[in-house]
Length: 98
Image (cartoon, rainbow, N blue to C red; front, side):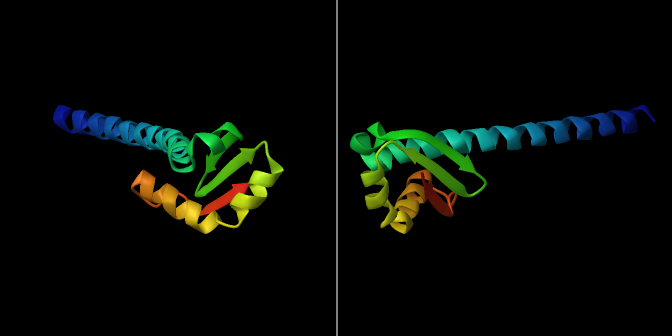
């Protein structure tokens, strides 16, 4: 009976680790998305980037230049592809420029 009880505890611990790992992965994805933006877009565009937020599969990018925002809006699909390539996985489906 004691062995069975210890197995239940280890399964509970495993679930806690799994939940923690998923939260950690989400956090890492957010950091990686920001780093990918800076790498792919370069220093010039990063200077005008005031905020980046990854929510589910959408990357929200706040830009301080309306002219730059307009220019980048024409190449959203290409930017998403370059970011996902830099990340090594399809993390971003949609790009919203603000």
